Length: 180
Image (cartoon, rainbow, N blue to C red; front, side, top):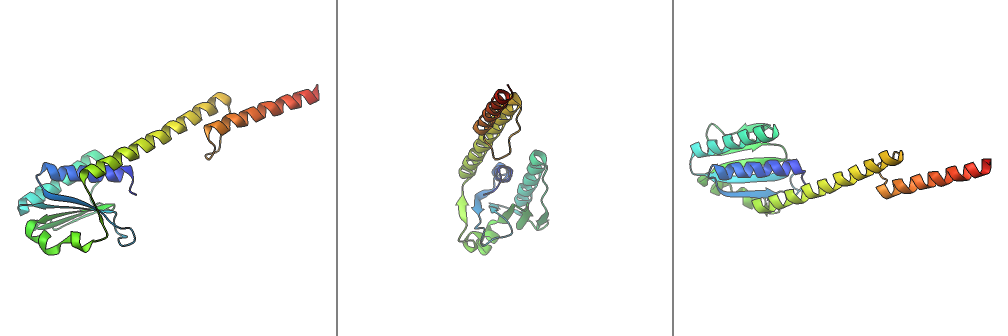
């Protein structure tokens, strides 16, 4: 499963395609056993070479502005019939209608799962909720550690930190009784 940032970048790239009126936008989640190169393909079509270049320009501008990311490489921008943008975790393919029909990447990647933009946005929301819950658990744990003055190992939960403090108090009381 890709990270939240990768999914957010992919969603931003898909939104840029929509903004430039790209047609038939598809996101393919590639099978990891078959594709060691990338996690996703974002595929869309434009009506002209000029529109294809405009789509790729918009994707590049948006990802640079929002995430500080540049593509590792861009191929075919001069011709504009098939422009490929490599962002490592996902690859964007912007085709002319004829080239897309001819190469048919969707058919070549039969094991890939087709995602909608709504699916991707739902996944991002779920990932952000999980991350928020983890950070809140972590902050509760650090608050308890500060209050009781005990530093817990990473694997210890907040309840175990409190229990550890109780054991320390009991041990101190026992030692104090023995000395008295």
